Image (cartoon, rainbow, N blue to C red; front, side, top):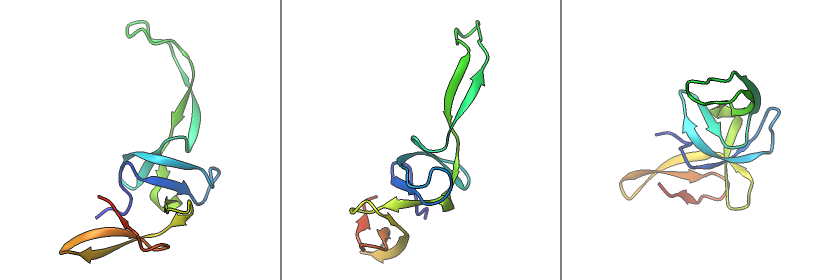
Length: 102
């Protein structure tokens, strides 16, 4: 069971984007794409066959799963635990004990 899933609100806990919050948009092997976090400038060539114009484009790059934490109700970072409730595994926040909806 993955502790961080697509659509979760996370906060960056280390690195150059420390403190930034965003939503997980995609999950790769052990990296995540988070909106507004780890954004780099990329130079793009024009492609007349597709109608794409060239220039400098902002691109979101992946960030390690270990560098983010889920946001609790107070807006603070929280670790995630897994427990069995009603015969099913559920995720819960370690700071508040609140169960995360699936």
